[in-house]
Image 1 (spheres, rainbow over the protein chains, first blue to last red):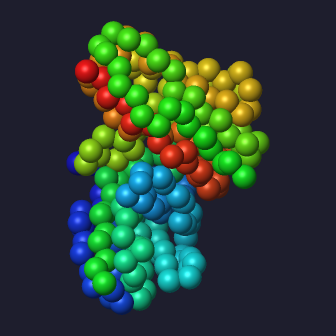
Image 2 (cartoon, one colour):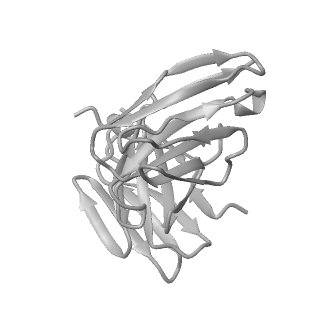
Length: 107
Length: 114
């Protein structure tokens, strides 16, 4: 079993839908990161959080440390949100990554 | 700002050849990392560095070497390339460790070993 599990693996949505991507982890962590990888391959950081909730535009990330679970929500999804979303957990100098959730938003 | 720059973007190697993937960052970050990404798998840490002159192994270091002579540069050396090293390689940097620092990634280098 991987230390970081994401669900779903693939997700197709219609433009405007509310989207949730889940991340569960089995190790102790100091922080959790959400990353976005576009079809061209580049990876950008969306959020880093260690407790509670963060919001940036239409994106919201939450974390429940006790349940070892985090969610990434996208409100009013748009085709430009189509990408792979990656969850990563950090403990010291070590970081473990989920396999990613491939999101396709159709117009 | 250039951020993290990796070269080359694409490379095909024959089995047994050697090569160096270059990584440069212009953000004066202390921490630098090399990851590999295989299809359907999460990124795996190859090597990392917490500052010039300091490097350490990650999860999958076999077949690779690194050096960190300056804050800006963190090259990854592949010796005696093998088909198992076919992958996409990402260099990343951060001001502090992943516990507190946002990660900045390069565009990736796609390596094929035939």
